[in-house]
Length: 352
Image 1 (cartoon, rainbow, N blue to C red):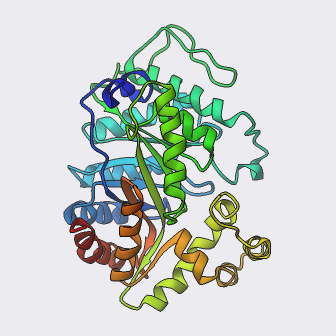
Image 2 (cartoon, helix red, strand yellow; image 1 turned 60 degrees about the horizontal axis):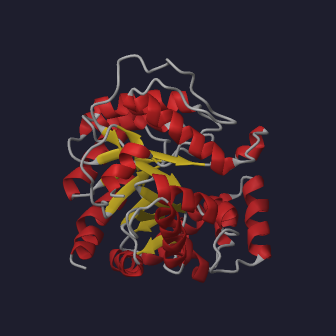
Image 3 (cartoon, rainbow, N blue to C red; image 1 turned 30 degrees about the vertical axis):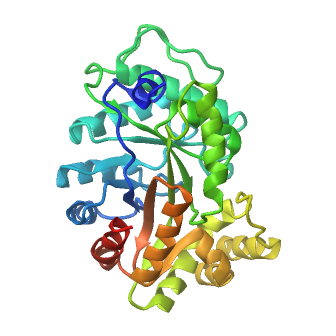
């Protein structure tokens, strides 16, 4: 099966020509003012980034607000949430938001879906999370295609005859699935355009993820490599590498709390994770960051001078990553981080 055929069957939206995976993107937290999103997205596009994403983390503004503002300020970059989850946003609502973003961006939207993190604080039952994501994809796909035959599922289903008001989209919306687990990675190999490993900068995870994804692709009759691999992580770049690493430790801690135990190629000391959790629970972000040793920071964040960050990213490309997403906060300030990534790191990587 070709990537185009997979999109018709399993991703979201109407069929279209297959796309090569974009190689470089920026990921923003949804904690900024509208004018900031417009300015930063326009800068990202001017530097030549391929994708601009907005995170869907719990307790932050919904990413659709920022994405619609970015659509107004750009004309080329692909835009999408990385990632939404079907436990806090029903698939019917996801489909409606993606229809709005695709229309606002003239077809440049992509959809990122994941099981979600930190949801236990809300008492949400995430059991059977893999099947919930599959069912969500089926509902969203049907609505964006204008298929009114309905879908079946234990958690999410679409009644026959229902459709989004306004009709089907004329564009195909590519699907990205975020996961660290082999089961969802294999499902993504069958239905997605890209699979994202979020909160990682570890080259050792790339061949493992590739094997899981290609196993799922093969089971669905797709070719090896049909699904792009994306790695994204906290990024702090500055000409003062030590200052960048200090800031990155603090920013990385909240994600390391979740993904530190998921990396199957590393053994994160339990006392490090427990210390991070204790400090974060007390609101002590700097103390939590100080718990992150240097050797772990390099596996869970991009941090340092432009040359050091470019070298880290090049190692991931060599390991087989198709796209790198440099995540928030990008630098000691938003604008300076985007300037250094776009003006120094990206040109170095384009030469690789």
